[in-house]
Image (cartoon, rainbow, N blue to C red; front, side, top):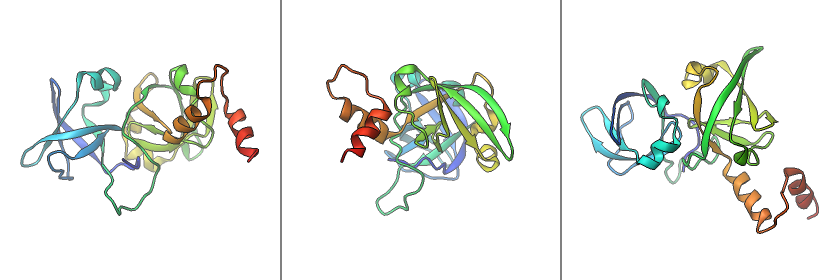
Length: 204
């Protein structure tokens, strides 16, 4: 489990076959889980100043592999007793999002990100979403898209400073939104909306 708060930006040393080698201040151990651009990966090799994680072919099909070069976000898995900040992130990327618009908004920047329609139901206003491992709040839900408002500190210290229109990003929806939706949906054939969920919750 992760929090979506980036530990540091690691440098990509190499990506060969299924092995991604990174250089970072953080020193993991063999077998440790670490989120790299939001994907939970396992450390399989250590060297004097680098570590290597392994990506399966399935992972490489799902992830935005073009972002696994230069620098990447890393976050070690939480340990029992760690201070819990951010939100609960599993490190299981649901799908790819696409940057559709980048607009200055006062002292912040709005990013409009589209996603496949089948995942839109898990995006809710003021809910959480993880973009390349960064925990963020959804400010507005659009049709098969959503708006994020990012402050300069986050942009300067993450891959957001490199994103352009058309950039692909790893996207993990809110775990609780997925669970709640599927719990209430059950085997019903009728579609479930968040308005209906709110109505159900208000009746208790």
